[in-house]
Length: 162
Image (spheres, rainbow, N blue to C red):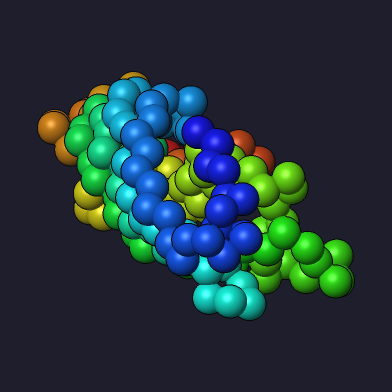
């Protein structure tokens, strides 16, 4: 969704509200279904333009430890300064808009990627999967031997069997 900010830049209007809903699938391989909702306003403060938004991700995701699918909601507020001309191209405090048009979809997507966790967890106490048999350790215990013997020292384990 592209917003036309010509009237805002010209000063004929002081603010422009926006609302956006887009599919969350594709933002991360962990997201199975869901939506991203963004509502906010772009305000001209006679010197710089400020975008304020509340972004909410409501989705079904896969746990990074146990591979179970669960529902989650991630919400955050964001503020971003916008300008149509930069004096210093190294300035990363502002987003530069060209031709008075601003792609709000791209901005929301990149903001979500920065705020999302690197992997989703169903709970902080999630035990994950057994590395030998694949059993979900949150649901039951497996009978696998959890002793890991370094292959370089395996010969020494026979010494104690005598």
